Amino acid sequence: MKLENDLLLRTARGEKVERPPVWLMRQAGRILPQYRALRGSLSGFKELVETPPLAAEVTIQPVDELGVDAAIIFSDILVIPEAMGLTYEMVEKKGPWFPKTIESLADVKNLGSGENVIGELQYVFDALAITKKELNGRVPLIGFAGAPWTIFSYMLEGSGSKTFSKARKFLYQEPEAAKLLLEKITDTTIAYLKQKIKSGADIVQVFDSWAGILPPHQYSEFAIPYLRKICEAITEVPVIVFAKGAWFALPELGALDCQVLGVDWNMKVGDLRGKHNIQQVLQGNLDPCMLYASPQVVRSETLQMIAHFGGRHICNLGHGVYPDTPLENVKVFVNTVKGSSYS
Ligand code: CP3
Image (cartoon, rainbow, N blue to C red; front, side):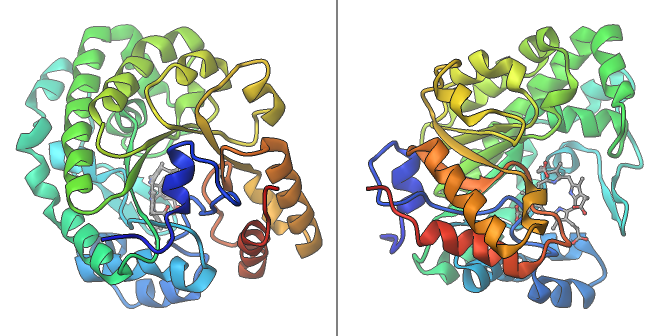
């Protein structure tokens, strides 16, 4: 089906466009009263994720309410460990928790991987198909997955962590088991993203949320090769790689075969094209906390960001929007981008 608004895809392909497209990481979620109402009527987060018509409904909410230039399928990166054999729970007000974690090579060997396990995720593919149909071509649909290193971290820690010392310890004590696990996650992720694309994703984003906790040499050894393999395997649609906090890895990220590089607010925009000579289209990078400022400041900072990037840019925050962000300011952000023009 032809898209009415394909600005995101044209931008990702590097075409010259009239203005930058805009969407927000975590746009489908607690910033929206419609989301909170639906979520409150359910048993929990997983019920929402695993019920395709409801996942489709919350995916479309930000398109209706905010007028963003893309929808991102409502799901979570943790469905991949679950399909491989480690179930997760989403504990209210705390976040994800895995009753069983990876502790040894034997545990790694016991996990399923690749095309064999993605049948477990039919509910995600169904949610994409329903969303695609209900969007009826209004905007592109973004599919996503966690990067292997970030998924690995959850599989070893069993939850979020301040230090990630369990995940990082494993890299030093069991490097070969770590690599086997990263391979298995990578193969599963590739099969998963390909099926998401077949189910309707027009573009995909890979979230390496915990990139910034590794020393550079370990990021080169335990993260980059797996990102590279994913980028090389996904040839059907544009790929966005977002490696949070990985400014130290810019030369390697810049060499990935992905069309778009997501950047957080720790990166100096001028340095990306200048000093680091990044060629990909860039996505980002307003500080999510800037959305707590006055609407006037939100507007001026947004315009300044657009000017700083100066084209080949997708407007977004530098990470997910925080749940208590004033909705009015989110709208000012989106509307400021939509009212802008390169000329
Ligand atoms: O709008 C979107 O961006 C699509 C939905 C989306 C969710 N999770 C829904 C969600 C996406 C893209 C994710 C990815 C995700 N999940 C990441 C990578 C992005 C990032 O933020 O770095 C990570 C690290 C996770 C793991 C995760 N899921 C955590 C740490 C938490 C708890 C923290 C929190 O925000 O509550 C979740 C839960 C989660 N995933 C919620 C949502 C809307 C909140 C659950 C609820 O409704 O109570």
